[in-house]
Image 1 (cartoon, rainbow, N blue to C red):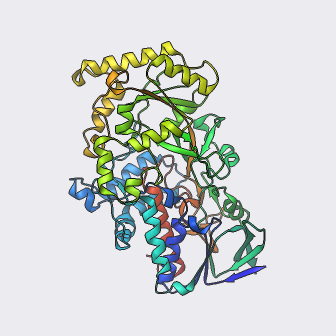
Image 2: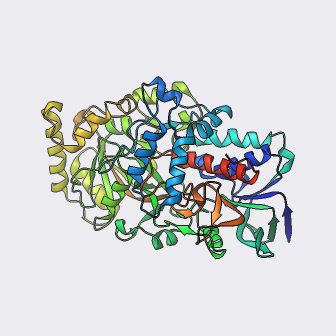
Image 3: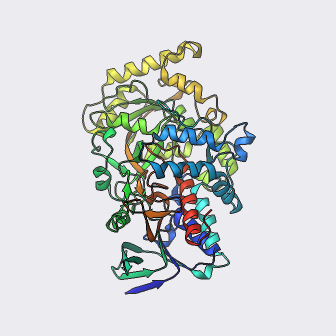
Length: 537
């Protein structure tokens, strides 16, 4: 049996684990990091992400005339989260994040070579409840890939790098105890089945959430607001986000909370080169597209992204077949169509300013053409009857009603023809609101009709629910110590990142303000390392 010994064992090589290890190395501690994935994927899901981080009071906000404060952000957060009376630790973590993210996430990342876009994005504004009252979504220049690369480089070149050992392909399955206290963890090599043990004075669980790696567990914990789990559920998370360590912590008496709180998206499409089972991509839904149900009937009130992501999932899940379509044309697609993640934003990922400006000004032709040519969930036609025929052929029946879809498009286009002063359509009113912020104006069409002969061909995108993030998990206090079901810290056991619902077992409550995932990994990881090293503030 392979055996490893160090001051601290960190389980998980994602962003939270990396930040934990950096703090421990700063304190002179020896660290064993165990990651289940291959070395080329060091950095986990953060490395694949678009790289947005929620920040309060940034220089970018100030330059754009945005007045923000921790108190304002916390008020928005609590309204959006809809915390319950029992949510003591989630609320405490939300308050900690909004108060500490400027110095301990934003400035810390800048000191580590991370730069941000000059204009923050304004998303999750809120629909039925208050969301972000100002723009707080700060995009890393270089996407999450740059974020991971820079922090991994700091690990590799740390003055105490000799105290760090990173072992890949190691699947941790449980914990070892000595004299009634945790002494380490054990498991098997992912490829060969050889057993191993790792011992340390402290163990940190930073192994990710409970979502796409085990869709059966996602279905088991499906939130009651979303009716029943859909037949087609895509994986937009890590292939190893299976909750294996959640189960292990639970066996030790650790408190697992809010496992039904999930951050899924309504606009998932199938990846044409899957790297994991049910591999899905999260489309950023074009705001000027018509969002219709499985029969081609427009949702009423209309679905528009940017306000309440959870509501979109709720509305789609309330339909009979629990999937939907977006209807648009090439002009809208070039301006608005996007896919989340580093893979489909190469100009930002590779930090090519001219290419980014070209895509912004003339449309992202590469992305649109790639989706049209390769994605099985995208169909294209020059006429509406031909488009509906392809939609029905894709689904294998005659579910989409040509007459209903045609009427919805005609009504929408007629409303646009009346002019902004006479808009009564809720979608057009929201587009007008979005375009008031310059960060949205450059990415949103100015009231573009669907059936426009100058904007053909027509495009239909079949969208399924896609599993993305866990908003619940292992409960922790503000020192990232794992708590038992009685609320007491379990000696020597810590947790950080998505495994904790990004802090406290669910610091987002019912909804997330976006950008709080990567930011939550950084903050909770740093706190875990500082706490173990005796440097917690």
